[in-house]
Structures are given as structure tokens and as C-alpha cells.
Length: 101
Image 1 (cartoon, rainbow, N blue to C red):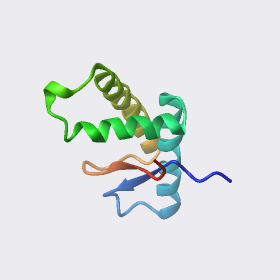
Image 2: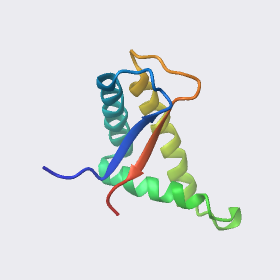
Image 3: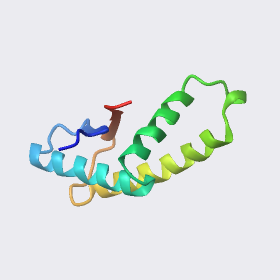
């Protein structure tokens, strides 16, 4: 079995039962990968998005801008899918991290 390229954690939703949290994280990961074109594309896009945090605005490339837009659209769709059927709280969020570089 292939090791995951990225992980998803549902944060700040402590009252959610463990099985529901795992299902929500799986839905989020599945939709994010589908929206971006696969797990490797998720990892690649996440690397670009994280790199923007330390990049001066004048150095942000068009590719990075386009990738950021795609990421935001995919993350919204994934969050909607992840929280489907369980609702959510004002403070809950999905944390995505790369596990393979």
C-alpha cells in the first residue's frame, strides 16, 4: 500500500466522535485530490501555497497566483464535503500537511 502524500486533520471540533472525524477527513482528502487532479497535485499545490507566506508580493508568479486560486476553490469544495452531514463549528477547520516531498 502506498503511503499518503498528504494528511488531513479536522481541528477544533473536540465534541465530534472519532469515527465521524475520520470520515470527514477522508471526504475532505478525496474531494481535494479530485479537484486538484490527484494526490501528487495536492502536494505540489500545497507547497506553492505555503511558499507564498514568505514571498514578497512583487515576486509572486502567475503560476503561483493561478495555483492559489485553484487551491482555494478546491479547499472550499473539500470543506463542504468534509462537513457534510456533521455540521461544523465557527472555529473548526481542516489542516492539510505534506508527508512526502
